[in-house]
Image 1 (cartoon, one colour):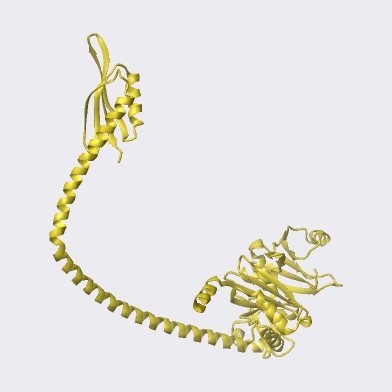
Image 2 (image 1 turned 180 degrees about the vertical axis):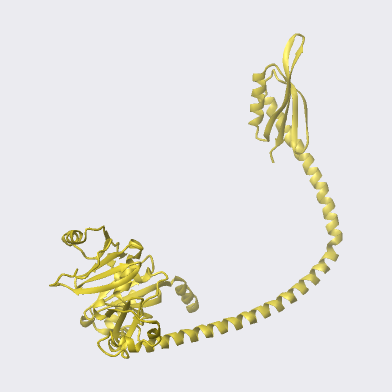
Length: 423
């Protein structure tokens, strides 16, 4: 009974992606499966760890987590515009030190073609330890600007754009060109200085998050370009922030990973080890299954062939007798069926054929039938054709020929009609 319940439970379990937006004040969690999404916001400093763990367990109930993403606020991440030469890419620690406020060794970092992303490993490890206590184990660590880029990608394509995402705590600005982030900036709210300083002129502006009508009018006045509002993803009565929902919209885009280097290596080695073990197990199992199946198949074929030969020899006289009987029965059945059809046709003609039309001859086979007769007029001949066409046992009624004749100074039409029997 337990085994059946377990199988039934596994059959109902759905796969989902989890995105966690961490900050010191709040943890936002979104469970994304393309249909029944879920979203919760927690205040860790006001909630005991065991209560928080229970709530997160309820959030994930009924789903198997396919992957978990930790999203770091842009304010926590160091971002620098960077251009490395080919030799420097081989040993990045030395050139990266020029762009960071401290040595590159204790930093978790990644680079794109234009930008360096970095965050102290100590901070990342502290966040991972806190999440581990509430049963969250991220597979990847991302900065919120690239997740927002994925969420808005379909809206701008190749067009140079400015993406603005706002919540109660900060304003996130991302300048994008050719699907690549030129730079991003996070401004704490309320801000005292203008957040638009140093921005390139975009061809369109995308708004995400919480914006009032006054804010939109000011942005339209400032940039004078098309303004597009990004439609958020819904989860029940809540709207999931784009910096969370975007993890399911990245497609084939390569993430800028902020996992510490040691964790990257450990997870990569672990993944390779699992893949090697699974591959080897699969190959051995496949080879054993093929060998066993081949032997069993060969034995089964030999046994079946011998058995069939013996049966064939034993029943050969009976088969010949049955074939002869079948042919005789078929001939009798065809004859009987032809008689029945002919009787039905005769009854139909007696009921529906005009009395002035005279049928002289009926001839046919198991497939076709021919009518030969005389009609006083073409109109009556057409009526005969129509009535034959309406018969339930005939199809493909066709007038083969008609000739005008005279007899005792009276004109009449001699006709021949063919038709097929309906099966």
